[in-house]
Amino acid sequence: MAKVASQDLGSQPIGKILIKQAVPASIGILVMSLNILVDTIFVGHWIGSTAIAAINVVLPVSFFIAALGMAIGIGGSSIISRALGSNNPVKALKTFGNQITLTLFLTITLAVVGLIYQDAIILSFGGKGAIFEPAKVYYTIVLYGVPFLALSMMGNTVIRAEGKPKFAMYAMMIPSVSNLILDYIFINVLDLGMEGAAWATSISYIICFIFILWFFLSKNSELKINASHFGLNRSIVSEIGSLGFVTLARQAVVSVTYLFMNNILFDLGGETSVTAYAIVGRMLMFAMFPVLGITQGFLPIAGFNYGAENYDRVRQSINTAIKYAAILSTCIFIVLMVFPEAITRMFTTDLDVIEQTPSDMRWVFAATPIIAIQLIGAAYFQSIGKAIPALLLTLTRQGFFFIPLILILPKFYGELGVWISFPISDVLSTIVTAYFLNREIKTNLITQPM
Image (cartoon, rainbow, N blue to C red; front, side, top):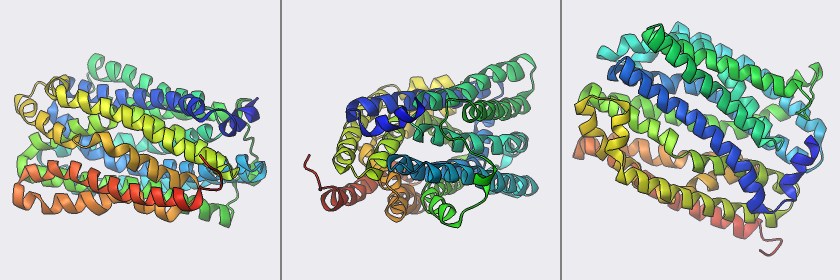
């Protein structure tokens, strides 16, 4: 039955299989995003607004280490999808074994290094003034659980590559729900403050890992590996690395963006501006869940059909994914333009933060309706194994446009320059992605008429 599920990627109608893949992915991302959202609300109301800023300082560091797992997962899953599509299960199994070995070694090493140099890292990411101490408490405990998160993120992408989106959804929902329950117990009932928030997060990562381990050991998975698959294969590692580097580079740029944003905003507006950015950042994670779900659902479909040389279905999947994502992103845009103050009040009672955040939020989401092209375009190149264009398009928004803009525009427009950098970079990166995606379709996916 598992094998039939993976073959569905190449046989079912594109709209139907995209929804089948995207809805569970969207629900999983929604629950995970709600977890981050509610976690921030709990921290803001039960500990204080400074605690929100403290978590915002820690997130890019812990997420970068965990993103190694996602990078290895997405890079390897692209190989697995194409291997299953071309009926090569041996390569799929070897790839999965190599993913596990790489994730374990790299994430544990980085977590240890991160703990050794924790003070310097926290300060460099904007953990200054009253933010430093709560950030340090949270950082130390969360890093213990990060390797489990990395393994979970890696395994989740492989589950989806097998054509099992519901189990991938469960893998995202379980730690999110457990984290909220533990947040209530540790913060509100036991009054453990930042330590409670951190332990709730780390324990939820471990619970997620246990579920994913069960999936691969059970009959639900068709990837039954043995000890021989863990030995690193140079060609597979190279392909995982080249494709996974796209995801890692994206998260690295996200982490660098947090570094610049936290420091620039602290200098321009102090803790209030850093807290405003933290709230807007949570909304970026939460509000975009359906669009990200479409993107996640699109990846295995494009990869499988490209591996099967069914280019007509690849083109259909691109067009359908962009259409669905554009409709959803427009709905998100309308909600955030209309209710930014009500959204801000969910996080805090700090009047200074409530006064500042709504206008910032409107600027950040101003170009949301058009970002579907950028997200799907970059994901397409990654799904078919074209690492260089995938990397360049992934870095276009934040690396090539956003970071230079936030370094330049505040010199002329102050803090406003930071916020208007968001829509400008969205528009520019979408134009670039649309050009390269259109060229790719016309030159490499025209063997069959639409």
